[in-house]
Length: 434
Image (cartoon, helix red, strand yellow):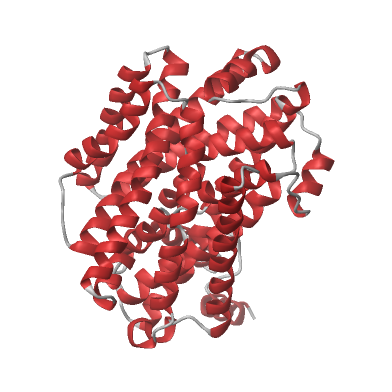
């Protein structure tokens, strides 16, 4: 009997807690976690663009003026962002090329030059928001004059981008760490603000637009949340993980990237929602309409204490630096892909710094510039969506990963929503009702 048990035990690998039967399972689980960690990163880099300083401007403005009424915009924008970033990643994994490169292959050269110009305008509008955010963060935290803070922001961003020399993974780690700083800062803010959670719940799922100005802010939120330049960038960032190019390998890669997107984009959603919630709970509740970032920083101190205003400044600085680095990376992808031109990163950084430095030197309200830059982005947004939809449906390029009719329909609906919102904004602007 003892021998029979011994045979069974040997055949199964043992049944005791110290036996090999359980160790392979533990190792298997650890192996799966390690494998997932190897794929995590691209979506975290991309998600930083969804909580850039432009989001601070539109979210704080929306919360202070319209209380919790516009939280639903954040939710629906985030759902659209998840859909679009997944399609961008799928396109990059399926073809082994990024979206601008595929556009260069599919569309005529003059059309690609037009695409490049529009994409560069979008990248500059993005960079304006990000650069101003980093500058304001340094100014608010350390009282450095705006012009010097701007130059320091440019230098710090350049250093982050320079780290790419040592591999994309290092840049991903730096940017993810900055994302963590932003998230912790706003978790702290929301804890101090003590919002009305019942109202938060209602306005997360019930769409309302109180007036024409709310439409302007809502479109700005959309422009700040769904970003054109990271639709291009995501298809590039997945390339360094495209090691197994068999259909099975690509399916596995896409599965891992969907997990990456789900985690990163939901963090971005909670941070964006927290911005609106804190602004509504602190500013709107006390009858304060925030017109600029400095007001937001100063108003937090008497209402919630110096730690809260410090957390705001730290979050803004981390947001500006990380998203500015992402914007520079996207700019390189856009230029190289569409028109096959490569500019050294330091020269590109210098060019994209100039509009923000001019705004600082002239004394234009950075908050107004931030909101307008996000509205401009929402007008540019339909172009990369339509480019992606036109390519992702083609089986000759995508193979088995080509969009199904249902996915294509959803993408068309999203593009239609963006275009309709922009048409409404245009009408309100020219009729003076915005």
